[in-house]
Length: 369
Image 1 (cartoon, rainbow, N blue to C red):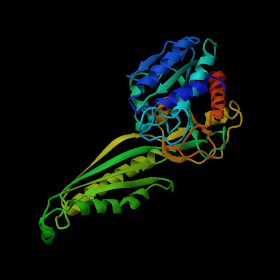
Image 2 (spheres, rainbow, N blue to C red; image 1 turned 180 degrees about the vertical axis):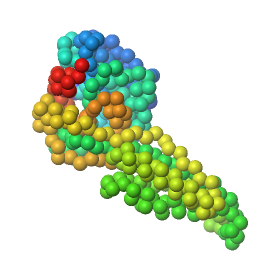
Image 3 (cartoon, helix red, strand yellow; image 1 turned 120 degrees about the horizontal axis):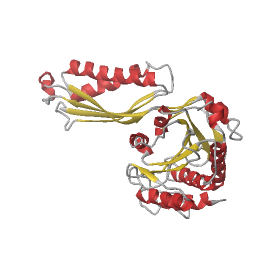
């Protein structure tokens, strides 16, 4: 089955949270060094290595992510997590394992382009890619970038993708409301923070309607307010997420949510602020690359629909055309579930996909200089 299996099993046992992947990045760097590469860091944790043929050639970027989730493992695997409360429940261990074996197989080859292998920290925060980019991880003359994600529901071992938006933008908002407490019998002497919050939530369907895409999601998952049955609440908070497939919808909904907050503040005499935490754009696959990939990677399926799940690989797509592929895990439990596992028989398939992508002449296909 190749080296990917041993890499996968080792990494699966040592899951680490976003921005804390010290053991993981150290192991990956050691593997890369053993192949002959000179691994470097972008920031404290993200690891990368270059396969350089000539300085004058363009670059492609192949990316895997490293972080795990605060999930208690229930998979029953003999190589289950050794870190209580943490688990590779999103398959990032497999992503790293497959790219590692591919990097090892490619070392020393002369290709029609240079390759940067990226093992990225903190994808689950949606900020790891941008942090690495700010540290200079994107090479000059980058002509294409690629990533793939193991994906339940796609047939076992089948690579899949689609033109255009594949994964949603992911934004988290927190609304903080400050009012004035009073006895409920004298509500007019107070400023009701809870009523303000309820009013804003009631406007969410109307705000979401500015998007014509029925999958667009504007969701509030938490409301906190009040301390007693007879006191006008002085404070309230809302906590939710926005998921869209286009920058236009994202910008429109953000603008309308702020306007609704301002209107509610005026109506109830309260103060309202909105804070945005993290956030990443939608993963939008380049149509030309997808078309070319059909002739590079055997058996690519296009029988998939875009998902509201987010992926910060989208930030790399701001610097060059890119494609995110899914690799099917069949009928496994879902991602982010304690019973999730990656069927090991798909690991060689993933390695083969990377080798096909790495060996193809993207410079000629894209007409790059």
